[in-house]
Image 1 (tube, rainbow, N blue to C red):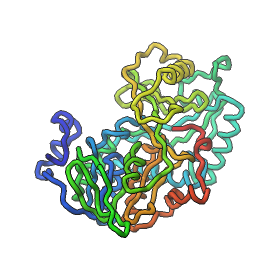
Image 2: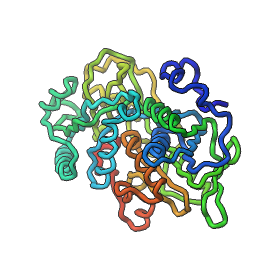
Image 3: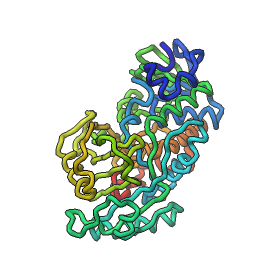
Image 4: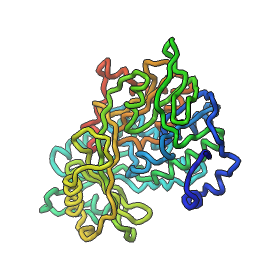
Length: 417
């Protein structure tokens, strides 16, 4: 079995036939590593890359039950922003945004990062008041955000309907100009190539079935479908399954999983210049580089590991999109999907050490995982290498649920994406 198992056409399309030569292929995992990272998504691969690049730790294995970038990374809707309310969140997501801005140059791979701006619509007086408070908090934390009148919002996004007779009239909007989108699966491929070039092993089709611990509690490795792999440190970064894997080590975490639905339209000529989000109707929309309109709905209200959900939430979202953007009413939808997101009680991530020596957790991101990708990988690598959190992720430990120092972005983020 080779290290990467892409079909030939996919390998050629992403340049793997040139950049991942066959001599890099390894038939079997080594018996021992310094670090094992569970989950070959953007966060896990990013952590492996930064461990090698910034901390000189290259004896690393990233184990993945499927193929790299095939989990939630492949199902994200690619929105990037940092305009969160609380200081802890603003620091975390703005750190990630700063890394996004130089990522393609850093890893020599075009991740299609486009800072086209993120517009968040206000439909009620309450929305207006909350958003303006939001802007003031962002500016105090050094995060760019500004208020637009309905007319200014339409000038920035011409397809927007600002008629006062609309079911959800637009009373204004916030705009983060540094926000935008990126190509979600390209981020995983880019980090994979860059990490592998520095000596990291990426083991696909290698599902973790158990976490082994010594008598003193220290981790000693993972049981997998390809046998036991030893390691001094283990980091779990498996979106939507982190609680299951942590349970293998006897650690219970406050994480639940919910389906989150999205869909894409048939491709059209460039017609939508930015990203628009609306929390009141719980819909968001952008246009991909392929021309598809990428439309997202909200999380379902039931706990599930399913990759789908009922039709009513999609119907609500599509009807709202058609009213806010009437020019899209005749578009056909090509496909829809449901990604399973893992969320904590305060809708903020857990990123740090666990009570088990040598075991680290990166999970509970909810709908904020993709926008945090380079920042999460960078901070996880720091935490693993130094066995202590970076000042930015120090507030996001498991301990906050014991002390009550929650970072309640459930409502404060103004939108759930």
